[in-house]
Image: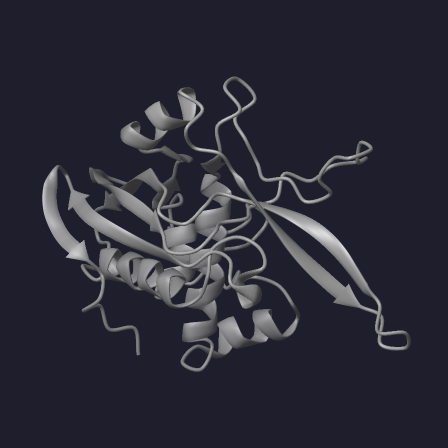
Length: 228
């Protein structure tokens, strides 16, 4: 396939509420958190893994398209991502399919590259100075028989913090012109839903701001993006 260009898409992710993307732990130290956030092992700074953002966009777009595409609905009803491999499926074209899936024609490689989002420069400086502490949010599970609460500490990046995001978007000869529009729809859906864990309990409300495509401002925000 002939590669025409690779768009660079960049901007800012602003946290509207605390963000929790769990690191996962095999064991919890005495007095430690049982729900820590993912952090850079070199400087202990929080970041947003590319897999978290990409996976959320994909799952929301699949839910959006399942009513229009029987192939997508069939996969989702089995609890699996869309793997139809059809050239007319924006999900499979943008996000890719497993190498074991037979594709329709020459589907080509994944179009979207989602890199880890690191703290924006101003917030990174505050973090280095020790002026950007993470917050601990306590959640309670209630024993329905006794009414006793069992508190669990949840670590979060506090609201107001900014991350710099950086995406790559490959364009091959013959690609439909609206593929990039589907990406922005996915980003808007993340805003309307949530990023990371505990979204139904107040975490993970975000906004994408100052979105640039190839160093040119495309959107100041995504408020005007229509997804339905």
